[in-house]
Length: 375
Ligand SMILES: Cc1cc2nc3c(=O)[nH]c(=O)nc-3n(C[C@H](O)[C@H](O)[C@H](O)COP(=O)(O)OP(=O)(O)OC[C@H]3O[C@@H](n4cnc5c(N)ncnc54)[C@H](O)[C@@H]3O)c2cc1C
Image (cartoon, rainbow, N blue to C red; front, side, top):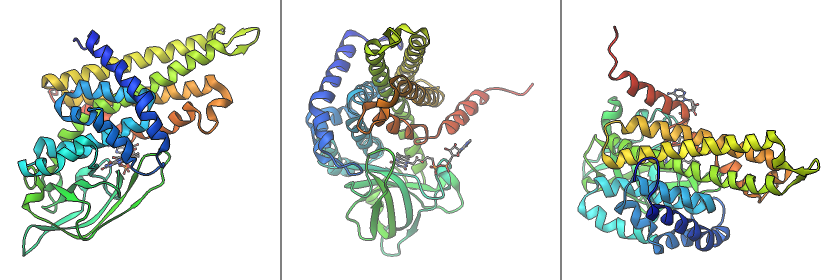
């Protein structure tokens, strides 16, 4: 495939995924409890083989999965993405023993993973994190501190936790640990958010970890976090594109059928041109997401810039498209339970997490100036 068109097999795969999302995942999502991990949904993602593909295929495939699931079932999309975000560090940087112990359950959906980087005083500035890993005279370290806004917390089965092993050394003194949920001293509580997925805080009160729990190398954990985010960033864009497409298609159907002023809404040029603008921006975002994912899969040197651009453009576009879709639907879009009411709530957070839009602009600018010499 080129960055600009999918081959027939990929197009068919996207259609198959949308079908599964509608027929097999949507009914399970509807039975879930908002704000809690929907384990039946995660197991079904495993049964369909989608969790396995998180590790066996590349960034573009991840984008196709996220976009297609988001189109018909955002809950399934988010559950898939969180399994990937939480477990990818173990897959890519973990020891053989860690992988053997945890990844089979992640792949089947019976083990739920989470990625714990953010803290109350370290969000966008993640390198400022202070959760302390203090050497334990007996063995390993003791973790003390707090994490917040952690998706799947406190219900996950294990956490990829980023902690400070060397004080005062910024990004260079952070270590990634695999912390099983049943470690003594680990607690957590749920947070009630606008978007319905499970999310919460984690408290660490002298939680014991050993060298066997280190993911990668001590003091090199920030790299583990950043390489995971480089892979997942374009796919956050794909999630956004899936939501934008769902909003666009709903708007096409609505404006084609709604009677107004002696014709249909679509006969008003102001309406049809707005829909054209929504389609234009959605397609531009989709192409940038696919191109960034393809660049990741090829090992291109400019992945950070392209991943940042794709995430930024797609999440901002989806916000615009969903908002315009609400406008063109009128009051019915704001009724609780309407697809657009749901998307309006879902579309907001991706502009903040995995690097807020402003942070993406910072990355893009840094990459642009990296090779420029002042005259
Ligand atoms: C639904 C949801 C799920 C999440 N899931 C997880 C998870 O699973 N794991 C995890 O570790 N974290 C998670 N997070 C946390 C998320 O990563 C942080 O919210 C994010 O990094 C921003 O941090 P903050 O909220 O503390 O905002 P702050 O860092 O306080 O930033 C606030 C605002 O300041 C501005 N700003 C910040 N930095 C800059 C800059 N450099 N230049 C210009 N403006 C700037 C931006 O407008 C930004 O939105 C989640 C958040 C949400 C909303």
